[in-house]
Figure 1 (tube, rainbow, N blue to C red):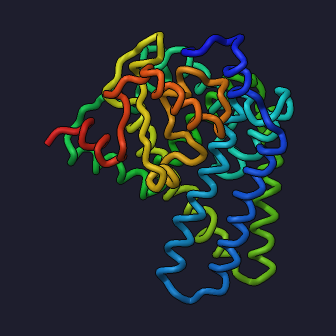
Figure 2 (cartoon, rainbow, N blue to C red):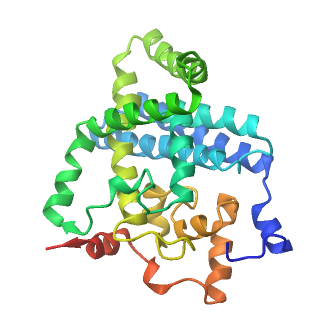
Figure 3 (spheres, helix red, strand yellow):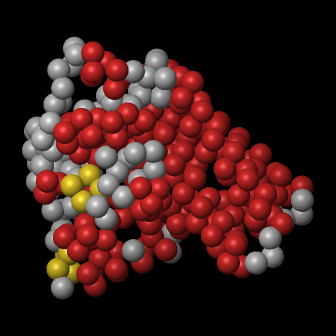
Length: 296
């Protein structure tokens, strides 16, 4: 942590806002409703393709808010964060919130050390550009999603020690997805549930996650100060898809996980003005990061 934990500034940056959390969730949900409405009336393939990409982005954005719930930054108590996190991550990625929480907190405790469960995803870097491109093939085939589903399911059981609890925790998400499928069924187009909802979740979202994951930590080693094991990419347009809700300020998040997502940019600006951020960890494009972590 680069700020005094008892300082007024730290308290201000870390203050949880229930109203803002509800607002962010509501806006992301309403955008999905709008996108689905547009896609149901359009006959243009290009608009449909854009819609699928943007729905994947919205699903992903809601999962990122679920990430905030892991850190108890959405609401003020653990119970509300867990309920919201399960709805957001289970419901909009199909992956287990409990499994993700189990591994993600370990990731923060031991970032890029051997005990970091996420190190396996980036430990081979730097790699050739050709090998990197091959890494995306499983994403587009839906195989990455299957792997992550089983991976987080296994870790959820390791955390909960009960298949019954695991099933109960999935019920709200299953109910939400069932209602959405029922709507498409009622309008005699059940296949659209797969095309407009499952496809973005299983194929497109893992691509966004993959780019973000390698951009954040590839080519770093463990550092207990958290100053040299992650990077920040300041590019609003690219981050809109790759790292929604200020997740691109990743070094800031690792050095101070209690800062709410809507204050991460402010925290970034403060650290830059104080000269506390390492320049080699700051990038202005995901393309430049890819260039940095790959060889010919």
